[in-house]
Image (cartoon, rainbow, N blue to C red):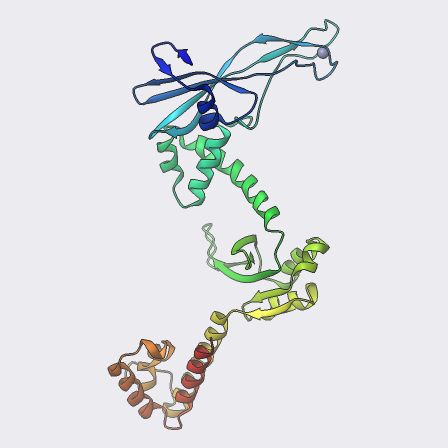
Length: 338
Ligand SMILES: [Zn+2]
């Protein structure tokens, strides 16, 4: 079909544009205009008979206001969607209903200046790590426009994700520390609840305390709780207690990373104790055990012959009873196990 627009004639296949650019039923393309880098798509809804929402009398079209939205970029440049809307009013003279505009959230949500598909696209871009300014530049629109859309749709996508992720049989609790910007010197701790089966985050709780985390687990539905067969955790007693009390049937699983880091901490404690026993003071720069402190925490396989030899001779000097060497061996065997 041939569409006449103000300055251009564009040959378009109606159905193709509907599929590719709008893809919605009850929506038709009125014009597709390309002037220089600017692309504008003009659409309207094709409503059947519309009734008054309060008295159900027939409504008639009062105005056709055109509202422009920022749409997805097409061929590298941002597209404008001009939506020729329908403003209706009730024909019943006794009805006090004012006029109303027909909306369609599949095209654009109320109070959002981006089309729904552009808002979803922008949200994913920002979710993948691009900045709001970059996305705004690509859409040739204002920073606030994109930011508002990302906040609105981000929340909705997260909610949809939570719903989808409710089907899992393995969760994990992990502690994350973060320093607040607002002048607090002490780090705050959060608990990440992850769906370890589907590698997704379910929730971030602003606490690592037993009471708060257990409360969150308790608030989940019974069917959700019954499904959990495995509970992964670092080795914190608080999370172990959460599982024991709130999900008693779930097998508690410790991540190899946490086991190895516990072994590393124990090895380091032995090194410091032997250091004090041997020399009567904390490690100093030239002390043999102080000099090997980092090498001890490295994996055996990462040491070349020279480094391995250096480790052995420093241990011979600083660790005559072989306590550090034995601890090191245990840590390495534990790593082998995994
Ligand atoms: Zn009415």
